[in-house]
Image (cartoon, rainbow, N blue to C red; front, side):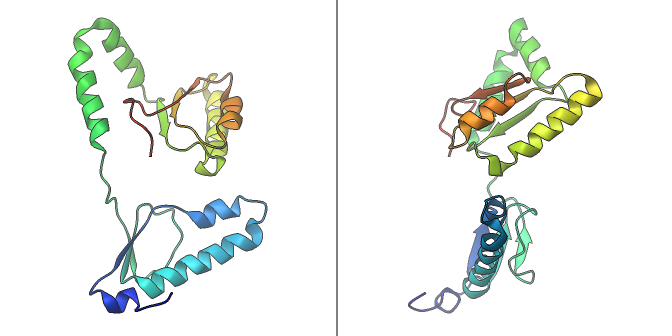
Length: 175
């Protein structure tokens, strides 16, 4: 990159890694050669431009082992806290209590995000199939979001205990 290096210009540069582009690429038809290239370039950028990199998940690729750590730095969005408080206040209603009990079952699962196969929906389908073989029924899952693979994913979950909804559970948009 032209100009002064970030590590020279600033006293301490911290990079935040949040997306596993190497894994996304490996699922693509050209992934055999693009995934290693993306992994190499990502590592090179971290080494060249960061003193430290914080990975938001341990499943992200290794960038520069001597420079990286894994930590949750984003916390919980206030919308989720607010929704929990709203539901707590409404529990005086018996119907709401029954729904909260249903939602708090150990098999309840939700996904909030962009609907892409690369997010692991194929693995989720496999887990549901395994669960059904063990218990006789699919576990419930609420899926909030939209994306380029939305129709295919919706079709794949059809007939299962799944519900695909537009928007976030609190009515806000999904980033």
